[in-house]
Image 1: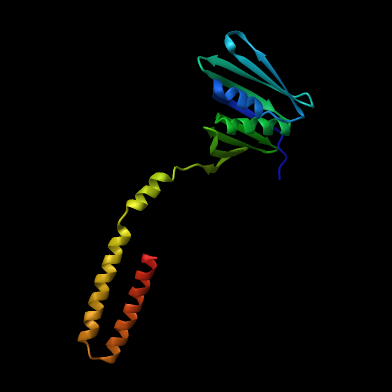
Image 2 (image 1 turned 135 degrees about the vertical axis):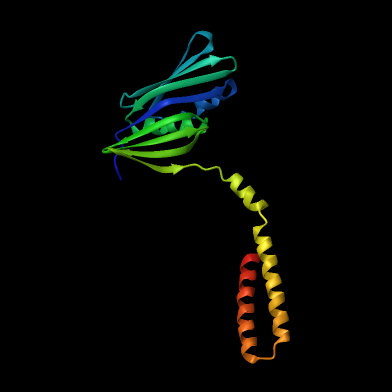
Length: 195
């Protein structure tokens, strides 16, 4: 597996109601990461996270009425600090793009409301879609409402009735054998559709 060189949070955004700010602070529970909180004018805050290697990240939370808004772009190298920020980003439903930089390629992760919606791999001269979130609910609702299978089952039953009428009307043993083979196929189709 390739060693990650750095992680960039590009145009990342967190929106926290005032009531969640204490919960946000509780999520920062790593003994190797030091947390400093500065209260600024108007109730805004700046949270500084620093790991033991000296790398730090500043999270500026601007207070807008009863909401704290954090808009940021930064680059991290330390995996521990990167992991903590990603956990906070997911737990508090962040939006934005995360660039994971590896030797020879870059992975772009697009987040919306804390979950990954799309992943693109960029290599020199090419790009490839790795993952894209699709909303499956409309498709499932369509399939649930669809009556195609019920129609096909009704058609098979009509065909079975015709074959049974034909079997009763015929006297030839060879024709009865052919009809029985067709009945067997229709029974299998009916069984698979009703299952």
